[in-house]
Image 1 (spheres, rainbow over the protein chains, first blue to last red):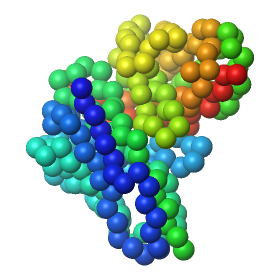
Image 2: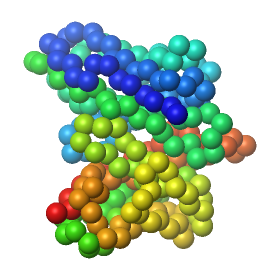
Image 3: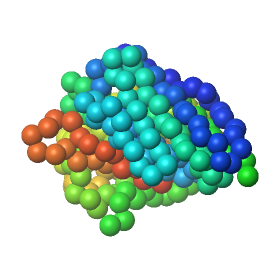
Length: 114
Length: 117
C-alpha cells in the first residue's frame, strides 16, 4: 500500500530564506506527483505537477524535483515571503490504476516570519 | 470558468440526520472525486467517478453514497450522520486526455466543513 510521508511537519523561517520541503513515498510505481498549497480554511491549490518521466518542474520561485527510484520529492522555495505561509501537501497518483486518485501526505505547515 | 464549486461551505448536523453535499464543475472533466480531510491529516478518498453513470468506492466509503447523473455534478450523500464524519470534505475533478487511462492534474473545490454533534 502506498504511503506518503512529509518531513518536517512544521517549519518556521525568517523572510528571505531559501527552504526545502521533503516528501517520500513507499511505492515507486507512480504516474505523477503533485505539490499543493492549502491556506487555512481554504481548498487546495495545485502548485506543480511532475510526471513520473520528469526530474523537475519550476514555477517562479518554486522548484520541485522527483527521484522516482528512491521514492523522494523536494519542493524548493526561493527567497521566502510571509505570503508563502501555508500548509504544503504532497500527493502521488499511482501507476497501473484506473481511477487516478491521489494519495496524500499529512503536509508541512510553513510559517515565514517578516 | 468557476472551476469546482461546493455547497454548503459549513454545516452542523445532529447525529442520525442526513444531508447531501453538492459539487459541480464546469470544465467538462470526466473524472470526479470526493475526499475527506481530518485535522492534521492528509486527504483520503471516499468515492470517485470516471464518467456519468459510473461510480466506485475509494479508501473510506462507509456511511456515504454518491451518484453521477451528469458530467457536471457529483453529489455526496451522508445517511445517518455520525460524529466520526466530522471533517472537511473536498470535491475534485480532472480530465483524462485521449488514449491515457489516468487523469492529469486535479482541481479542487473550496471544501465543506461538516460538524456532527
